[in-house]
Structures are given as C-alpha cells and as structure tokens.
Image (cartoon, rainbow, N blue to C red; front, side, top):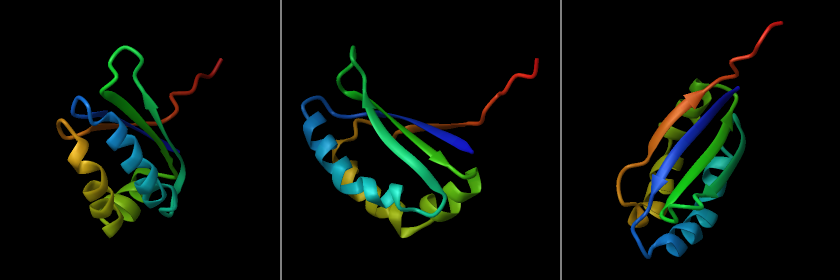
Length: 99
C-alpha cells in the first residue's frame, strides 16, 4: 500500500470554490482502480492549505490508473481554477518496526 500525501494551496478567497470542486472531482480519484481511499483535510492555521490523502494499492496503480488517464485531466480541469500553485505530492509506505 502507498499513501499519497498532496499539499494543495488555493487562492485566498477561493477555498469554498475549491471544496465544491473537490466534491465533484472526488469520484474521479476514489473510483480509479487501485484507489483504496481518498480524503481531504484543511489546515487549521493556514485556511488556504489543504492536504489530500489517498491510499493506493501501489505507486504503479496510481500512475497507470489515475495520473496517466483521462481521470487526471478531468480532475485538474475541475480544481485547477482555485489553485495558487501546482500541488506537491509525495508517496509513503509503512516503515514498520520489528521488535
């Protein structure tokens, strides 16, 4: 499993527009093959900052079934007008600990 953590900064005053667009666009991610879950959180101290947390079966599932598909273009078209800058994504796996 891979956790995609994406920081999203939106234009001041466009936070509501972004959340509305996300609600419309969310199924494009959530129904992509290999997507286990997706959720959006808003920063408490920086109201223009959001974090998107998406769990994928693998990095390849994310790349092939979302980023390189029409879903991504549709996603970007829906949320793009609210973005202050391109989102920054990083991918994580369980570090685990053996004791």
